[in-house]
Image (cartoon, rainbow, N blue to C red; front, top):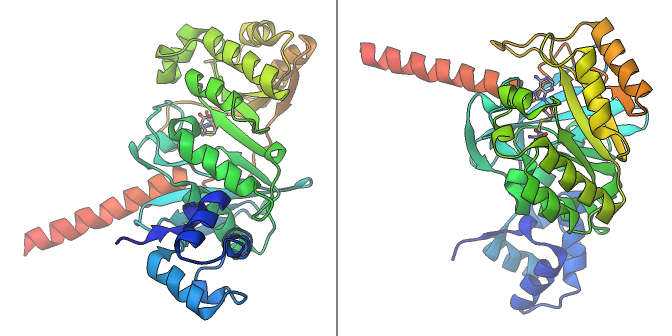
Length: 359
Ligand code: SAH
């Protein structure tokens, strides 16, 4: 029989599993803490569990461990960008950002991305697979251990589209949220989506109080289609209707991400249209100066455009902030480090191939 990944079990599933091993279910409490709070990497570290039970666990299950392949630290602001290896050797990225209100981790939800947004590096190498819940939570454990820092906030804004990996992402939030585990409140968790409408409605029903961020980036469907293929599937109106339902059911304010691209979506008309679109909604706009990716075609809007855009939105009564550019001296935009890593590995593979074919 194949061993199971024990980190994937919810508390209730773990209780059941322990009972099936012929043991008392109260052990689930101890084991859950070891796995999700202490984040041990072997059963032997579970010192308050009998040797016999540890052996049984070892026989039927395994603990997953992620490895840091590379870590870049920004000299400007201490932001740490991690390239992390999954058990199947795929690589993902996580970023640790230090704010005065606490440490925030940006986690990946998939290996690569299918969404194809033209300005985003994560999508350039295509999509490989979705992450398991334990691989999403594992990024927190790995980064906490490596950095020695405690994480208090999580944003699902790394590689991948979280709502395209719905079940695993929701499960990971519940695991991270669980009192016996990391116990990070859902209000400290933000999930960002390019707008998979049916899953926004589904998420609204989950009774999770996480913040929802929508990657809007344009004010008309026509313009949005120029950079975001998902706009061919769902209109802005459909997204906003889903957001209104999310607000109605959760009482949470929605955050709209708007990457300002020079000459593309940064005019006064765009700002006025955005203000009109969001008028009356419990919303917040986060302006992101577009991060210019390698071989990318988009240029960052100049400082004065960004300021003017924000002023216009504020005058429309829409709460707006500009995202601080953290880690600008490292490859901090999602997907860039992985892309560089893949390019390097490909070069290496090509070189190997050329060398061997020269023999
Ligand atoms: N797939 C999800 C989450 C991942 S990206 C989503 O689309 O929301 C996190 C945020 O960074 C999104 O708002 C995304 O549109 C934005 N983003 C991606 N590439 C960027 C770039 N080069 N510059 C600025 N923002 C970017």
